Length: 108
Length: 115
Picture 1 (cartoon, rainbow over the protein chains, first blue to last red):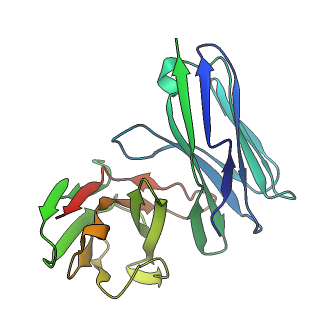
Picture 2: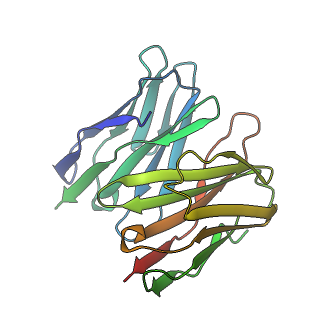
Protein backbone atom coordinates (compact mmCIF):
# COMPACT_ATOMS: atom_id res chain seq x y z
CA UNK A 1 0.00 0.00 0.00
CA UNK A 2 1.56 3.27 -1.16
CA UNK A 3 2.15 5.75 1.70
CA UNK A 4 0.29 9.04 1.41
CA UNK A 5 2.23 12.26 1.68
CA UNK A 6 0.93 15.69 2.57
CA UNK A 7 0.95 18.36 1.42
CA UNK A 8 1.21 17.53 -2.27
CA UNK A 9 2.98 20.81 -2.96
CA UNK A 10 4.32 23.72 -0.96
CA UNK A 11 5.96 27.02 -1.84
CA UNK A 12 8.22 28.69 0.69
CA UNK A 13 10.25 31.84 0.87
CA UNK A 14 13.89 31.44 1.82
CA UNK A 15 14.23 31.12 5.57
CA UNK A 16 10.74 29.73 6.17
CA UNK A 17 10.04 26.31 7.70
CA UNK A 18 8.09 23.39 6.28
CA UNK A 19 6.76 20.03 7.44
CA UNK A 20 6.09 17.10 5.13
CA UNK A 21 4.07 14.16 6.41
CA UNK A 22 4.04 10.52 5.37
CA UNK A 23 1.28 8.14 6.48
CA UNK A 24 0.97 4.41 5.95
CA UNK A 25 -1.93 2.04 6.47
CA UNK A 26 0.49 -0.74 7.39
CA UNK A 27 2.84 -1.26 10.31
CA UNK A 28 6.26 0.04 9.37
CA UNK A 29 9.71 -1.28 10.11
CA UNK A 30 11.49 1.75 8.72
CA UNK A 31 10.93 5.03 6.94
CA UNK A 32 13.44 6.76 4.71
CA UNK A 33 13.35 10.13 3.08
CA UNK A 34 14.64 11.12 -0.34
CA UNK A 35 14.87 14.32 -2.33
CA UNK A 36 14.68 14.36 -6.09
CA UNK A 37 15.58 17.34 -8.22
CA UNK A 38 14.14 17.72 -11.68
CA UNK A 39 15.78 15.37 -14.15
CA UNK A 40 17.84 13.61 -11.49
CA UNK A 41 17.59 10.42 -9.45
CA UNK A 42 16.25 10.43 -5.89
CA UNK A 43 18.95 11.05 -3.30
CA UNK A 44 18.85 9.60 0.20
CA UNK A 45 18.40 12.06 3.09
CA UNK A 46 17.94 9.91 6.17
CA UNK A 47 16.46 6.71 7.55
CA UNK A 48 14.43 6.15 10.70
CA UNK A 49 13.78 2.83 12.31
CA UNK A 50 10.85 1.83 14.44
CA UNK A 51 11.27 2.93 18.00
CA UNK A 52 10.00 6.46 17.58
CA UNK A 53 13.37 7.90 16.86
CA UNK A 54 14.09 11.35 15.58
CA UNK A 55 17.02 12.31 13.45
CA UNK A 56 18.51 15.49 12.19
CA UNK A 57 20.99 16.62 9.62
CA UNK A 58 21.83 20.30 9.68
CA UNK A 59 18.48 22.01 9.19
CA UNK A 60 16.60 18.93 8.05
CA UNK A 61 15.23 16.52 10.63
CA UNK A 62 12.60 13.82 10.81
CA UNK A 63 10.52 11.88 13.29
CA UNK A 64 8.87 8.49 13.15
CA UNK A 65 5.80 7.55 15.16
CA UNK A 66 5.42 3.83 14.67
CA UNK A 67 2.16 3.66 16.62
CA UNK A 68 0.55 6.08 14.20
CA UNK A 69 2.52 4.68 11.26
CA UNK A 70 3.55 8.19 10.39
CA UNK A 71 6.72 10.07 9.73
CA UNK A 72 7.34 13.78 9.35
CA UNK A 73 10.20 15.61 7.69
CA UNK A 74 11.05 19.05 9.07
CA UNK A 75 12.90 21.63 7.02
CA UNK A 76 13.92 24.72 8.94
CA UNK A 77 15.24 28.01 7.62
CA UNK A 78 14.79 26.71 4.07
CA UNK A 79 17.37 27.43 1.40
CA UNK A 80 16.97 27.64 -2.36
CA UNK A 81 18.81 24.32 -2.64
CA UNK A 82 16.00 22.57 -0.76
CA UNK A 83 13.72 22.82 -3.79
CA UNK A 84 12.72 19.47 -5.23
CA UNK A 85 10.30 16.62 -4.74
CA UNK A 86 10.48 14.79 -1.43
CA UNK A 87 9.56 11.14 -1.18
CA UNK A 88 9.17 8.91 1.82
CA UNK A 89 10.05 5.27 1.40
CA UNK A 90 8.72 2.61 3.70
CA UNK A 91 9.43 -1.00 4.48
CA UNK A 92 6.88 -3.41 5.95
CA UNK A 93 8.35 -6.87 6.20
CA UNK A 94 9.56 -7.57 2.68
CA UNK A 95 7.34 -4.96 1.09
CA UNK A 96 8.89 -1.70 -0.12
CA UNK A 97 6.88 1.35 -1.12
CA UNK A 98 7.48 4.97 -2.06
CA UNK A 99 5.12 7.77 -1.15
CA UNK A 100 3.17 9.96 -3.51
CA UNK A 101 5.73 12.77 -3.30
CA UNK A 102 5.67 16.39 -2.13
CA UNK A 103 6.86 19.15 -4.43
CA UNK A 104 8.70 21.84 -2.49
CA UNK A 105 9.70 25.14 -4.08
CA UNK A 106 11.80 27.70 -2.26
CA UNK A 107 11.72 31.20 -3.70
CA UNK A 108 14.00 34.14 -2.84
CA UNK B 1 32.68 3.18 -5.39
CA UNK B 2 31.16 4.41 -8.64
CA UNK B 3 27.62 4.02 -7.38
CA UNK B 4 24.81 2.31 -9.26
CA UNK B 5 25.48 2.30 -12.99
CA UNK B 6 22.71 2.17 -15.57
CA UNK B 7 22.85 1.96 -19.33
CA UNK B 8 21.82 3.32 -21.66
CA UNK B 9 21.01 6.74 -20.21
CA UNK B 10 18.59 7.47 -23.03
CA UNK B 11 16.78 5.10 -25.35
CA UNK B 12 14.46 5.98 -28.19
CA UNK B 13 12.79 3.11 -29.96
CA UNK B 14 9.78 2.34 -32.07
CA UNK B 15 6.70 0.53 -30.92
CA UNK B 16 7.11 -3.22 -31.16
CA UNK B 17 10.86 -3.25 -30.70
CA UNK B 18 12.63 -5.03 -27.86
CA UNK B 19 14.27 -2.84 -25.23
CA UNK B 20 16.89 -3.97 -22.73
CA UNK B 21 17.91 -1.81 -19.79
CA UNK B 22 21.00 -2.65 -17.78
CA UNK B 23 22.08 -2.09 -14.21
CA UNK B 24 25.23 -2.66 -12.19
CA UNK B 25 24.56 -2.37 -8.45
CA UNK B 26 27.00 -1.15 -5.83
CA UNK B 27 29.43 -3.88 -4.94
CA UNK B 28 28.43 -5.73 -1.77
CA UNK B 29 24.78 -4.77 -1.93
CA UNK B 30 22.41 -7.70 -1.68
CA UNK B 31 19.18 -6.08 -2.87
CA UNK B 32 18.43 -4.68 -6.30
CA UNK B 33 15.29 -2.77 -7.25
CA UNK B 34 13.80 -1.71 -10.57
CA UNK B 35 11.49 1.35 -10.58
CA UNK B 36 9.54 3.20 -13.20
CA UNK B 37 8.72 6.88 -12.85
CA UNK B 38 6.15 8.86 -14.80
CA UNK B 39 4.38 12.12 -14.15
CA UNK B 40 1.04 10.35 -13.94
CA UNK B 41 1.93 7.43 -11.70
CA UNK B 42 4.95 8.68 -9.79
CA UNK B 43 7.61 6.22 -8.63
CA UNK B 44 6.52 2.58 -8.99
CA UNK B 45 8.40 -0.48 -7.79
CA UNK B 46 8.45 -3.05 -10.59
CA UNK B 47 10.50 -5.87 -9.11
CA UNK B 48 13.24 -6.48 -6.60
CA UNK B 49 15.87 -9.14 -6.07
CA UNK B 50 17.61 -10.40 -2.97
CA UNK B 51 20.87 -12.23 -3.55
CA UNK B 52 20.02 -12.48 -7.26
CA UNK B 53 16.65 -14.13 -6.59
CA UNK B 54 13.44 -12.29 -7.56
CA UNK B 55 11.41 -11.71 -4.40
CA UNK B 56 8.47 -9.61 -5.50
CA UNK B 57 7.51 -8.98 -9.11
CA UNK B 58 3.95 -7.90 -8.40
CA UNK B 59 4.71 -4.45 -9.78
CA UNK B 60 5.65 -5.72 -13.24
CA UNK B 61 2.87 -4.33 -15.42
CA UNK B 62 2.43 -7.30 -17.75
CA UNK B 63 4.11 -10.21 -19.43
CA UNK B 64 5.89 -7.92 -21.84
CA UNK B 65 8.20 -6.99 -18.97
CA UNK B 66 10.84 -9.37 -17.65
CA UNK B 67 13.85 -8.94 -15.37
CA UNK B 68 16.86 -11.07 -14.67
CA UNK B 69 19.81 -10.97 -12.33
CA UNK B 70 22.30 -13.60 -13.48
CA UNK B 71 24.91 -12.55 -10.91
CA UNK B 72 25.47 -10.12 -8.07
CA UNK B 73 26.87 -7.41 -10.31
CA UNK B 74 24.41 -7.27 -13.18
CA UNK B 75 20.69 -7.07 -13.87
CA UNK B 76 18.54 -6.45 -16.92
CA UNK B 77 15.01 -5.25 -17.46
CA UNK B 78 13.56 -6.22 -20.82
CA UNK B 79 10.44 -4.99 -22.54
CA UNK B 80 9.25 -7.01 -25.53
CA UNK B 81 7.39 -5.74 -27.45
CA UNK B 82 7.59 -2.12 -26.34
CA UNK B 83 4.60 0.22 -26.46
CA UNK B 84 4.32 4.04 -26.27
CA UNK B 85 2.82 3.79 -22.78
CA UNK B 86 6.08 2.26 -21.58
CA UNK B 87 7.77 5.63 -22.04
CA UNK B 88 9.16 6.60 -18.62
CA UNK B 89 12.34 6.96 -16.63
CA UNK B 90 13.48 3.59 -15.31
CA UNK B 91 15.61 3.62 -12.18
CA UNK B 92 17.67 0.84 -10.72
CA UNK B 93 18.56 1.02 -7.03
CA UNK B 94 20.61 -1.19 -4.76
CA UNK B 95 20.74 -1.65 -1.03
CA UNK B 96 22.49 -3.55 1.69
CA UNK B 97 19.86 -4.68 4.14
CA UNK B 98 22.01 -5.74 7.01
CA UNK B 99 21.84 -4.55 10.55
CA UNK B 100 19.50 -1.57 10.51
CA UNK B 101 20.29 -0.13 7.13
CA UNK B 102 17.97 -0.44 4.17
CA UNK B 103 18.81 2.75 2.37
CA UNK B 104 18.40 2.51 -1.38
CA UNK B 105 20.98 4.10 -3.64
CA UNK B 106 19.63 5.05 -7.03
CA UNK B 107 21.31 4.96 -10.39
CA UNK B 108 20.99 7.93 -12.76
CA UNK B 109 18.08 6.33 -14.61
CA UNK B 110 17.31 5.42 -18.20
CA UNK B 111 14.91 7.70 -20.04
CA UNK B 112 12.93 5.49 -22.42
CA UNK B 113 10.87 6.92 -25.24
CA UNK B 114 8.76 4.57 -27.34
CA UNK B 115 7.46 6.16 -30.52
